[in-house]
Amino acid sequence: MIRLFKHYIPHAVILLWLVDLILLVGASELSWRIRISQIGSDLGLIEDRAWSHAGFAAMMATAMISVGVYGTDSLRSLRFAAARLLVAISLGVIALSFLDFVLASEKFWRSTLAYSMALALLLLILNRLVIGGLLGTAAFRRRVLVLGAGNRAQRLRVLGDKPESGFVIVGYIGMSESQPVVEEAIPRSAIHNLNRYVENLGVSEVVLALEERRNALPLKDLLRVKTAGVHVNEFSSFLERETGRVDLDTVNPSWLIFSDGFSSGRMFSSAAKRVFDVTASAALLIVTLPVILLFALLVKLDSKGPAFFRQKRVGLFGQNFDVIKLRSMRTDAEADGAKWASKDDPRVTRIGKFIRKVRIDELPQAWSVLKGEMSFVGPRPERPEFVADLEDQLPYYAERHMVKPGITGWAQINYPYGASIEDSRHKLEYDLYYAKNYTPFLDLLIILQTLRVVLWHEGAR
Image (cartoon, rainbow, N blue to C red):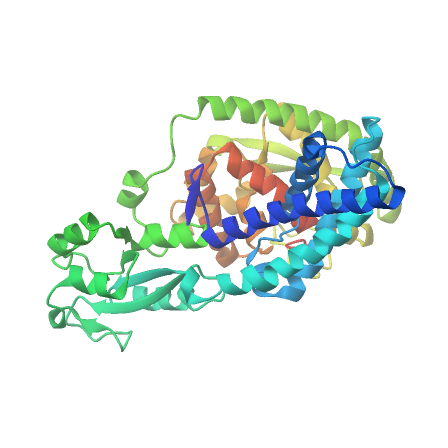
């Protein structure tokens, strides 16, 4: 994987994205040549339309990231990828047409955009047939040797067997005398020279998956492997990189303290984040005010009670604040006390079901962002009634309150909606990853991919 601004991106995704950019520029140029030949005009210099090609490719690539074209489902299913590509390119063309109209420009002719749309869709699907097919083979995956043969090694085996995995495990070495969970593991005593064994297998990374590290860590061997140019990784760090979450089953306080992350040098990033929050929330409130008022009226007509409701949530540093949302449940929804939401919750009104699916009920939260109580991106703020129990049952839950809560977040785009202790545990793993690896780049990825969640109602309940 490539680490970009503290966030890991698979090599396969980077390669596919770069080839996509080249093909998008090619589609834009080819569509221009087709249209020019039809009207019999002068083709001109390619430099004169370079900005148009770059703008087309950039807009399409942004739309593709937003709708999940580079997600795991798209990478392993051509049909899934083709559907997402069609949506992405359509949205990109609509956006370019709108920008061209607003700026009173003539850079993107409707005819060339139509040709570009068809050509781009064809070329990008072909790219996934050729490059995408090759990327799934072992030749394009990192070769990993696992030191360990217990439950941790078994977890790595399950992770590596997934089609979207970026690595292939070439061997397991049992480092203790206990009965191995991975039966084909080779005992350490059977390997005379570990460094040469690693070299012969063509290993690119060694992962420590030891159940008990005391008196079992082969420091001399690992030093030789490391100095030979092979990457050596610890189990929790490997899982964090491969899954985009902090694994609560294996981390300990010392790992959180000494591993990279939770950088204190965030003054510039925090200032930029606040400027974005103020600008974007003000613009969102202005643009969506008619929508908010319309659905506020519909909520009032659909069921008795106020159109908006306030609810206490836990924010930055554990401080409570009031969040404002469009009401989607009956007014007596919690007459018997606070409850988790459930699938097909009978407390949700008819209008409430719709506004929850398309996230319209979340729009008034932009006011909390404008006031500084929330950010656009961050862990979802939880209710005080639940936080006390969650802090008792889940390790490191209080650490998620060290960053400002958000309307959308890393957990929201990676984990389906859930309302239980177990779901909260999974979401906490993603929240900790976000808190640990926060950068404006990660915020941008989350904001873009939130469109995917909204379009396909992923996680809505």
